[in-house]
Structures are given as structure tokens and as C-alpha cells.
Length: 393
Image 1 (spheres, rainbow, N blue to C red):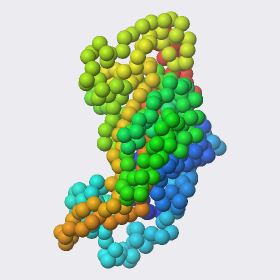
Image 2: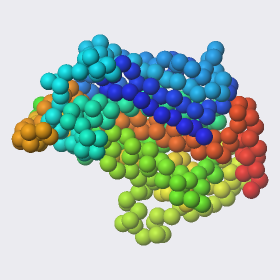
Image 3: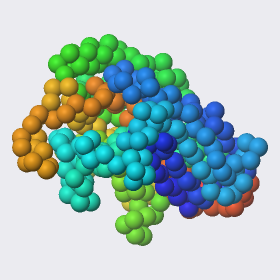
Image 4: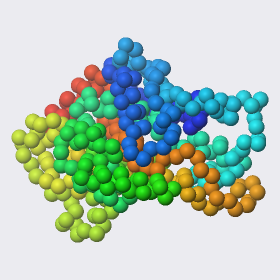
């Protein structure tokens, strides 16, 4: 239902996304999307590219006078650095210059496997698209998804849970308050007590010419029971969320709820016991059924159970180092030390914004599958009827 494609290269003229399936009547503005784009570019430890690009979105179709009209929405984020690359990345044959071919593949990147798969002898043809620059327009799509979810009081917030082995204490604050704490943190963490320690680590790693990774968490509250399905593997919502998280550049692991910790516990310390209180059904997006714990992370059997969605994902250290690693030239086969391109020391805070966006996209899709309509009012009526059904279940 909520479908999107992205296109564009890191040093091309722009990044583009086409979003299809949005209902008519959804309020949407460039200003609201730009807030998330600015968040993606922030965070302690970012590199020189952020000083060049000040990402702004343009809505090129599907919105009129501040509201969607039911047709595909086109989003565009211009690359300001294109001015320096318009010949090197030109689509026109007359600008071809084989002397600038990149033949030295970098460890940890898609360079070598991509070159082998697509029969390229210029790694530039791979690294331009595999770059995390692509996440800029995905964050724009995620902002659109959040605009839809907000119409139904569903809130999503991502933050840094761990950086280079330094763990933040998980906050028990309501999501609105948690977002404010995260917004006022240079590292987008919920635990200000460890922020200075994290910054010190980033500075030490930078001085050593190295990089550092971490773990991000994303919470979604107000999600009703019944999104996703158990009946086919590709309709399980936790599976779709896991795939979306793993599609983010440099992400190497994902878990929901307890995740891997559940494997070390006995079943009695894992599964969330179920209780019932009729009075709870009068609260936002809730039924009378509830759990005192949320070890499942809000999803059981591929279906949301009414508790908060809790996702955690691990980001590896960025593979572009100022202390080059060894590699081999794909043409000459000679050994060399990998070339250094402009890079971040730590992009974990930015990654938390991307993770927030992809979770919002998957929830928006699941929500539209369940309550789909051609106009936002139709979806609201469908949803209101479903909530009334749940309250009396």
C-alpha cells in the first residue's frame, strides 16, 4: 500500500523518491520534512560533507495547497556538491574520462562485490549509489510516513542506545518527553550522563584515524493491536521491520524486544504475561488487554499486540578510515592501502534518524494495509470502527 522507490547517486544532481499509495487529504509540507533532514545531518562526529550539504526537500507532485491529492508524491533533495561533479558524473558520453576511473576497492564497502556483479572496472559506478547519502531521501520518505501515523496518534522516536561499547541507560519517559531529551543531546542519546564519555571516545578515535559504531533504538507508541499477519512469512511485521533495518547502510544486526538476550533466559523470564482491565480500553489506541512487561517488543507471531514497538539495530564503524586498510587494485591486482574519501568518524546519531524513518515507513504500510482508503477521512472512519471493535473484544 505504502510503496516508494529512491533514485540518485551521491554526487549526482539530486536524490529522488516517489511515494505511492498515500490517501488524499493528508497534510504535508516541505518544512516538516526538512526538520528530519536537518536531524539526519546533525550529531557529534560527522564529517566534511555535512558542511557542504544543507539538505532541503522539494515536493514536485502529489501535493496541492498543503495536502496530498491521492496521486504519487515526488520528493527531491538536491546535491549541492553536484557543481563540482557535473562532468565526472555526467550522463553524456562526451564527458567520458577513463583516467579518473576508481580501481582501488575499499574494504567494508560494496566496491569489490558490486564491481564484480555489474562488470564494472570503475568502482565509482558502485560507490556512488551504495553511499549512505541515499538515506537523505529515505528520511524524507520516513517523514511522510510519520505525517500519516500522526493522524492516528502513533508516535515514533529513535535515539542512540550505545556508542563504541558505552551504553546509555534506557529512559522510562513518555515518548514526547524522550524526544525532547534526545533533541537536546549532541549525540541524540536518552542518557545525558554518558554523553561526555561518548564524545571523548569519538575524539580519541578521530585522533587515531579510526571510526566507531554503535546501537540505535527506535520506539513506536500508540500502535494498535492487529497490524501485520501470521499467515505468510512476508506479511509478518517483525520480519518486514528487520529487513527494513538491515537495508540501512552499515547496519549489521537487528532485534526486537529482548532480542538475543531472550536466548539466554528461561521461558518464564521471557514471555509477557497477559492481564485485562476494562478501564484501559478508554485510553488512546488501547484495549482492555495489557502486559506488565514488553519483552516481545510489541509484536507476537508477526502481529502487533498493542504494546510499544521496540527495535534495536547495530551499526558497524564506518569503513572509510583515515588510517587506510590494505586492499587490492581490481585492474592491476596490485596491493595498496585503501584510498581515503571524505567521511564521518561516527554517524550513529544520524543513523538513529534513518532507523526511525524506516520503522515509520513499515508501520505506515502495515497501517494502510489494515485500514486503507482513498482519502484520509475514510481511513479515520475505518480506524475508529476498528478501535470500537477492540474495546469490546
